Image (cartoon, rainbow, N blue to C red; front, top):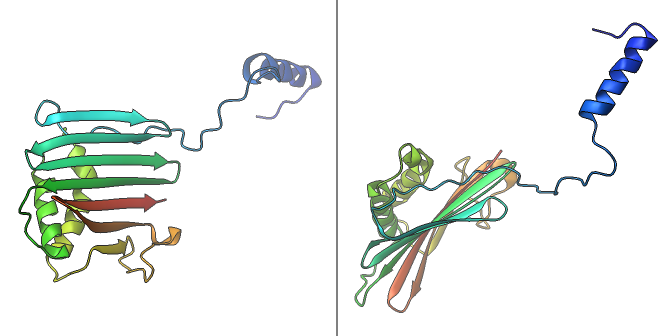
Length: 189
């Protein structure tokens, strides 16, 4: 409804000045491009040895746990106004780790992630990554890295552009006595 007379306009300006406008002397809020909490724990507490959840600045978090004596997981979550990402690193240790193809490691990672004990509703956040690992496991993929964009395209340079809506990736890293299976998911909105 428009303000029709000058007295009412003056009252509205004074009301805005007193109640709604910030003074020039007040400090501006911190310039945080990632100004919301997107990360929450996924795993049930008290189920896994050495379980820890640590929030970091800029809406990042790390969750770690020992699933068995020879298998550890690290989940790194990050979010911003228009994107989010999560990385699951499964570290397998042992003297005699078998040689496996990318597809076989993906199948093992799929079973590990699918079998974890999650907080109520938290498994929903992992379903796409579990499905991605399953889709790789159902192939004869070899190599040490594979990336698929959210629009199902395969980027020739291994990097998805913003317009694809995000990506899923799997990478195998081998070191003496350990193999890391790294699954990554990202989304851009």
